[in-house]
Length: 346
Image (cartoon, rainbow, N blue to C red; front, side, top):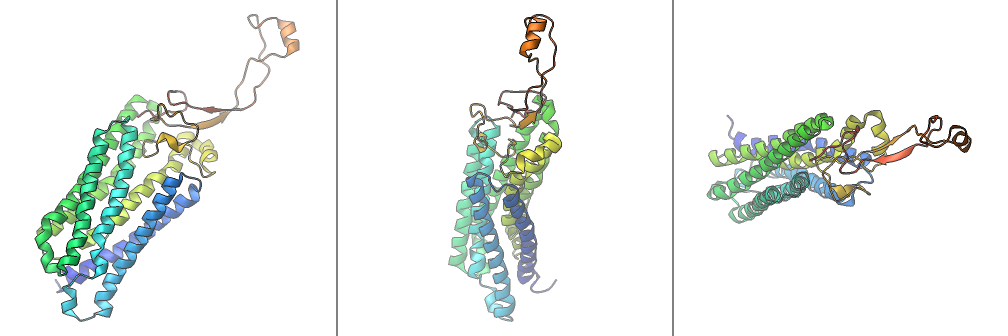
């Protein structure tokens, strides 16, 4: 292997993957803004903040490689010192990870019927990883030289392991609650299966990458762990975007062609366990916020008689003729309904 494979090479590959994933998250963010322009302000600002962090992180990652390969080309002494652009990477990663993990902690709180144990555990590990991530940034500014970073191996390992534990708790708890929902309501089985698949693909991937990053940092003296580390922000942000954007496709899946009329106006009407509290939807019965909420419009036949028919046929208790059609009316499945339109209880 070459002399620079474990230093510049690792940073270069990590930066290339970083920029590649930037395109993925940018597309996901565009889909979110165009599909849900009237989404809750909290979600809109959350996505905007993480998108800004995402672009800034890619910019400073590119600057790090440019600084080594162009500005200080051939300066071996400069390669031994961490530039400021890399020093801020752990703090940025910890902030993005904690924001996404707290988002999912609330999701677990909602689908877990307001049970506090798991959300508190997720928040606890999330705050620990944030603290050690910021501590890693402080240590990099303090130690400056890469060779000295191994003295703080326990801190970096604690940061990444706690991040992985929080992700695993999120994945396990959501899969558990969604499986229970699938067993309780047969109509929602296919929706639950899609949600479980999304949870494993997104949160499980971030947990795996955090563990790999921790193992590489603790066992190798080179910078190969940076290749994985530079992708973590993208993976966390993508996890949140996938959860938000999934509402449209899940509603179409649940309602069929008629579902398009309910989400095309930019306001989601489907309440799923993947991540949307009862307050997301105006008029939802907040007393029991753990169901799928679907708004439908149907034409219903009714036994309404005209005056002439009443005089001809007598009282409603006698033989009646069904001739009138009631106007279409909006029907909203309340939190306690279990009807022909699938209601997902979680």
